[in-house]
Length: 111
Image 1 (cartoon, helix red, strand yellow):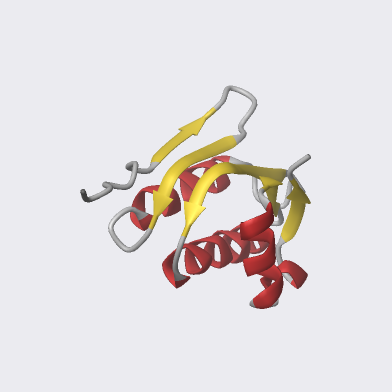
Image 2: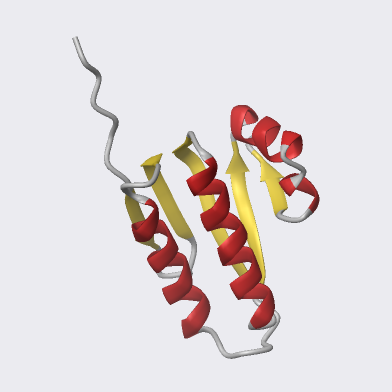
């Protein structure tokens, strides 16, 4: 029996929080990147806003997803904003710390 991963679903709530649910890999990373970039680009430059990405239901399994998070972090910083990863589950937190991205990205751990 072959298990098919859930497709990636990216939604933005009215308060501007980006929710990512599903698996992020080379076939789905563009959707996440486009969603984050759209939110970042819609904010006034240098308004020092927090761009929140809720990742509690995100399955990040390879470097492609890490690259997308780092890209969004850099884009937000260029616009004067901060990318915040909210509700980061323990496996993703360990990956971020092992790769030292936990020192670069703003991480809020899951409760």
